Length: 203
Image (tube, rainbow, N blue to C red; front, side, top):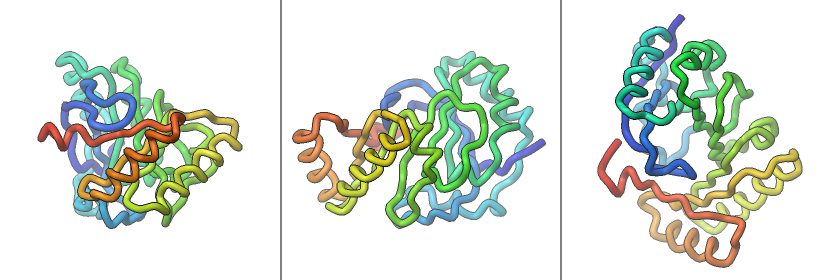
């Protein structure tokens, strides 16, 4: 079996609660969410990227584990545009925890150990992702994003979930940085997430 892949690489997780940890990334191809600020727009057209065998991806993950990777990150694109059951099954024998980064617009698939949900105002997530996520990470560019973040936190709570709450300023948004810092200072339930990999100049 195979799946469309943009790239694989061993680096540091740059965002969220696991920032700064060694990780092996599998970036899947295809995304229809269409965020204007996306820094991986080249991943959007799935047909532009080759299919890779699940066996080969598992082998690369095993090599990354031997080199020090602490977990595997399945990202995109929007990874849940694909059914991840077979990919996760192929990766499980490697022995590394599987982390999923998603906007939550598609049904959950695959057996992942950590779900980082980054919901978008223009395409809100499904309730099942709000119920299952371990961290809720909202990108902030303007004031409306703060209200959306609180609405998503309330929706997760209503779904019986208590994820870690993160605000992540848009990389090139000065307003987003100011809003995020000010909001977190006054709202102790929230944490600030920064794109440290960009600050460090690593993938």
